[in-house]
Amino acid sequence: MAVFVALGAFLMTLAGGWTAQRVTDRRHLVLGLAGGLMLGVVGLDLLPEALRAADHEIHGVPAALLLFVAGFLLAHLVERLLAARRAAHGAVEHAAVHHGAAPPGAAGQETAGQEAAGQTAAEHRHRSPEVGLTAAAAMVGHSLMDGVAIGASFQVGGGMGTAVALAVIAHDFADGFNTFTLTRLYGNARRKALAMLFADAVAPVAGAAASAFLTIPENVLGGYLGLFGGALLYLAAAEILPEAHHAHPARSTLLCTVAGAAFIWLVVGVTG
Image (cartoon, rainbow, N blue to C red; front, side, top):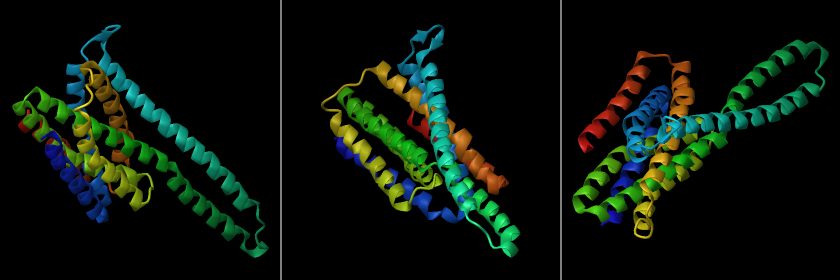
């Protein structure tokens, strides 16, 4: 029964990814909506659940909040390390381009053209594809845990299983939307984004099937949610939302962000 219900999450995840790729002509609106969805998921869903599951304190601070901060810092560290590595690699390439001699009459034009090309290349190198794939992989891992939650709740009772399944299915649309958007935002090919989307869709089904053979302690699950929430908040606040407003600082982009957070609030309220 749990696996059958998880198929609903599979379809909703694919629907979210399909929506994200169909509205690429309004990229700033897509990113604004994705940022709002991620903010809502973290603040209204993941973090409250993490605090409930991992409520013990470490030196006066809930363990879930410590892991939340650790997740934020870990995502920042990974993104900076990958960006620095790619920037260093790009600097070598840029130096190699300038090492070639230019015709005397075209020296000024070539230098200006090289500088413009270097700036454009630097903008593309700023976003490391590895970061997008890592973020998408984290979304897949979260969806796997969602499937485990569905299976575990059905072991508790049918009513509990139905409630958890409805909650997971409702926010898996946002998961699919964000998985595809994150992968593409960092410069990965469309086929990679689709592969990560499919993996994210399959994950709840696999998790529900695996739940028959394993049990995850509640405090471990709470710690995981805190860590994942921190990483997700970093991506939303430091990457997606600035990118959404960079080229199109429009009121409509801001409205999409608010709408994304409000949608998660509605889902949390309806599903309890």
